[in-house]
Amino acid sequence: MKGPLLPRLACLIGCVALFAQVRAAENNASDPLSQQAALLKTEFIFEQASFRSSHASTIVETRDGLMAAWFGGSQEGALDVSIWLSRHDGKEWSAPIEVANGYNEENRIRYACWNPVLFQAKTGPLLLFYKVGPNPETWWGMLKTSENNGRTWSIAKRLPNGIYGPIRNKPVELADNVLLIGSSTEDAGWRVHMERTRSFGQQWSRTDPLNGAMEYGAIQPTILWHPSGKLQALCRTKQRKITECWSADGGFTWTRMMATDLPNPNSGIDAVMLRDGRALLVYNHSAEDRSTLNVAISTDGKKWHAALVLENQPDGEFSYPAVIQTSDGSVHVTYTWKRERIKHTVLDPFKLNLREIVEGQWR
Image (cartoon, rainbow, N blue to C red):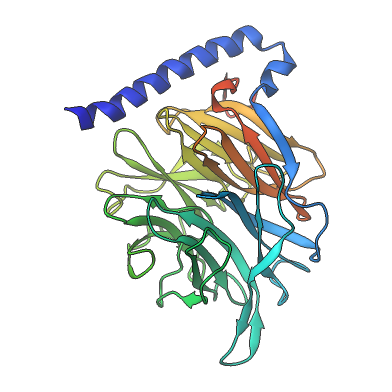
């Protein structure tokens, strides 16, 4: 009975915590300081760099500490765009270093790099997935591995045809060293599919698309593994809504894609399942633009509560968040800041001041 009781207990604890936080928020709604109590730190990973534009960051906790990566160059899609990486030594971030570029030895042509994803499984090497190619319709997946927590990297390996790796967000590690990966393609409309790999990128399989591109133009899924054992995929779309699919068999089959109540301005999202059983989502709570970046909390993946506003500037772009929970329980978010730099924010998930989202309105 021990196994089945643990996820139920975590879910119960999360529900109790959520109820208490909502009640506290009602009592403290007039106190602006209470809404920022969860914000422990905010900083730029770098102030200046050799590249002008930065986008699509990823963050991971290695056995040596935090590491972040992103693509940077003159502008998105340019031939000089590479994958850049920075390490955190417990006090500050290191200067960015280039860890991958799109140079092809066979034809001596350089292509742009896109959307890195760092992931550290419970065992095995540190993984760096990324894409290379002229555009998202024709790019291909690449993988590098590190046996020393990102200090040196293997030679880049191209993934099998039809396999792209995690398109934008981190995988979920299932049993027996299986990674469930949210992926998508844009060559025949925007369609989401799931990939599985064993032995850290050695064996691959792929599902059929989870959506029809004419109904929902969806890409870049983020995956939540709920305490109930069900998996939930949340997706970016062209239809100005975050969509979802659910799986009850470990990601082999999925329900029909449906719209959630949350808006989406055709921009990337990311989520993480907290250890207390609550789901945390970082996204732009807007159907129009990327000028606001928000954090929401849910105990069931269906009803979401407003938790924190990370950015809100009418003339700014704040997008493509990546989020993890580290071993000390804190939540770390990195995101694109005005396409110029990458910002890093640290949150205490137990101090989030939750409010109801009423008729789509953030309060």
